[in-house]
Amino acid sequence: MKTLAIDGATVIAPEQRQIDVMNSAAFGKALTAAFDPSKDIILDLSAVLFIDSSGLGEIIRLVRTVHEQGRKAVLCGAGDAVSVLFDMVRIDQLVPIAPDADSARQILKDGPAG
Amino acid sequence: MSWTEPFMDLCESLDLAVMAVDAETGAFLGRTGKAKNLMERLSGLSEGALTGLPDLVGNGTWQWAQRLLRAGDSEGVRVPLGDRGEILIGPTREGISPASVTLLAAPYDRGLNPDAENETSARIQRALLSGSGTFSYGGASFAAQTIPSMQVDGDFFEFWKLGGTRVDFVIGDVMGKGVVAALNAAAIKAALNRAVIETLADAPDTLRPSSVIERAQLSLGPELSSMGKFVTLCCGRLEAGKGLLSFVDAGHPGFAYLDSRDGSCWEVKGSNMPIGFVACQTFKEYVLPVRRGDSLVFYSDGITESENSEGELFGTERLLRFVAAHKALPPLKIVEEIMKTAFYYSLSGFRDDATIVAAGIDDDPSGPRSDWREELNRSDGEGLHALRSRFEKALGEALPNGDSRIRAELTLGFMEALGNAIRHTEGTATAGWTIHTGGVTVEIEFRGSDYQWYRVRAPQMRDLPLHGFGSWIMDKTFDSVLLLRGPENKKRLVMTKVSL
Image 1: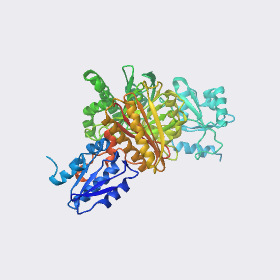
Image 2: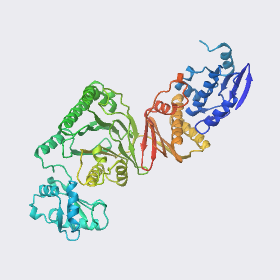
Image 3: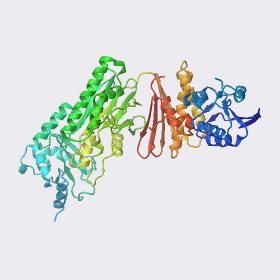
Image 4: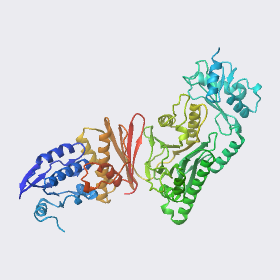
């Protein structure tokens, strides 16, 4: 899991190509460890080819924690398969989705468009 | 005191129709009062002439039965007596009789009811509601039979042969017994027939098992509900050419599915409630892929709730084992053998109507099909990744011009099913899929405890749910999701997308 601090936000970039029932618990722990409560979060999923519902649950857990700390979160870099999951469950009702990390940074700065 | 007297007293107290004879000589040893009446009705002989089974069934048959039973035949011999019914000669059961009792006879066919009024009612029931029959149509063979209990009850079945390619059918059972149940059953059968005819006239393309049941429910559901009555039924459509069984159950017992690929037998059951439980419900239609050599056995609870002398039910698992052990039999023989075995299991006869509808698939589905099966260890993360890639690739090859988004959705549903199986399995899971003309079926087999697979609710994102997405995604991405139950905690998750 790569992390990078940019403009007061932490960019978390998982390196797993597939997040599923076999590795989602470890993925969740790594997300928790990477979260700095003093900063907003950008979860960059551009390296991830596939996420199942157990991985989704860990992402929602992270977003819940971020919101509880009064911080903001943005998801970005979702490929085709991950977008199918996000669209299906309407995760955009919970957290903004950006095409890439730059757009995500803009959203944190300006707030979601529209 | 010899063993005969207490044994016969026991049989008498259990209201059994039992005649005991000496296996070697055929000499008459004793019979219950019920057996006496029934045997006289069957044979037309006077009591004095009934000195043993050879008189009734003929010496040749008698010797044949003796040979089989001495050789350890566990099911006995069925001897038809023309329109007088038939008689079973079988071994005694362990635990209820001395070892020296070797043969029992118990007539089981209908028409044995000594009460004339009930007999007339039973005839009416057969004419209006069921009876028996066998036929072949649309690449499949069918057989059905109802044996009423001593009372008039509410079992029924019906077939609709449609367009040369498919057979729609229903098997049902109305709550309660007697004339009221039978009249309700007649009304429901009429409503189902009307629903089929009206749909064929109005919008034939919309005729499905679910549409038939929903139409019938509109006319009957509120009335049944207000009377506190309900009906259980299973309405199906068998299309051998497409290799698909579609069905809507409404609280009916599951049915047995014999998979000819490995000889395994499964209980298949949906999740809808009986008609009349609530004034109106939307029925979920399920799909089960079938192929040549497979068998389907639908039944009423009169079969599985047959009870032996120790109060043990015949049960679903025994039925599944029986169907698996008789996989070579055609539908008519399957029906007859199950009826015989369940009746003989109970000895005293059915306490409820017993109905069986059996189907055998005679033809292969048309069009090309590709299959894949692979074992997966519950801790094999790499294996899971590889399976996803293989499934995605197979979909892409089979549907090169297909919608990539649909392929991604199906892959997601497939992976959710694998995750579901991995969470519930006690060891390994076997995953496989069949891509056929126009659709895909995923099958995942594992051994594990039961769970409420059919409880599917759309998660509300505003509640920040961490779980509960998996079953919902499976249900959303495939047209039908079913969990089949086999013996020894075996489960098979079957998901089908009929059209891509």
